[in-house]
Every structure is written in C-alpha cells, then in structure tokens.
Image (cartoon, rainbow, N blue to C red; front, side, top):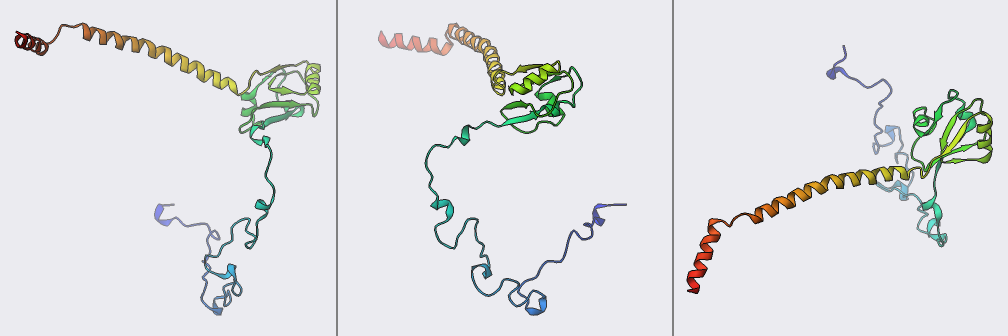
Length: 205
C-alpha cells in the first residue's frame, strides 16, 4: 500500500546532479564545459536578452515615432459556417453555447461569422459581425442572423443598473437615520443643560 513514507519519484524523472569544478576526472573536463576565460566562463556571468557585447542594441537603434493603434485594436473570435454544422437544426447559437461547445475561448471583443464552407441546415445565429456572404448562406439555409448591440458593454450596463438599485436601497436607510437624528435633537434638554442655564441666570443677576 502506498503511504507518505514510501513515496518515491518515477524512475528516470530524477538524475544525479552535475558536479562542477572537480577536475578532469569528473567527466566534465578541466573547465567544466565552459571553455577558457571570457564572460561566459565566469561564475554568475549571464548575458541578458538583447545584449550585443556593449554596442548600441538594435532595439535602441531603431527609430520610435508616430502613433501606434495597437492599444485600440479589437480581437474578434472568428467562426466559419463549417463550424456551425455541429449544432442541430433550429438551434439558437449564441456566445454561451459556443463557449460550452469549446468553439470560442478566452477574451474577445465579439464574435464574427465568416462564409468559409456551407451551412447544411437552418440556425438562429447571434453574433457581433457577419460577412455579407455568410449572411446570404445562413438565410439561404433557412436560418436567421441577429446582431448583438454593444457586445461586451452590456455587462457594464448591468453593473450600472445594479449600482442604481443599491443606491435606491441605501436612500431610505439614510432618510431613516436623518429622521432619528431630528427626533434626538427635538427631545427635552438633559439635567446638565438645565443646571448650566440656572448658573448663567444667577451670574447675570
């Protein structure tokens, strides 16, 4: 029976550590496979990525100017009509179903349908972008295409609506707290306040 005290690594997964600096009899030669002198022969002498021996590296020699639109680029999950043949006729194909069937994965700005292949049966396709040829083929097969409005920003709208609901719930609580404060302020003055008022009148007289 396997226990914690008799666990062993698989045979071949671990091997003997390469011992360096033990002379020529170690099997790695006099210099332990590092050659004679130089930056790579020294202990801790590693060369970083892009280092060119001290000369100006290529990344610094290239000019860098102008506007780069890469930060505003949107990546779409691409699907062809051949991929949609995996669904049964009359199925409503949306992002949730595509993720469950592992046809789309990861983060993307939306789903785009292209016209590669032929659709064998009618489907209700929900996507963000559809090519004109793909739309024709889907409608020819008896299906329909609906374009999503906004795509990802829908979640933002949901979050905004939830925030509005929370603020609406908090508003009555704030009004109740204000009412309790008013009630406390409208109560009769305490005994200490009465004593202070008497002392003032006696001093004035």
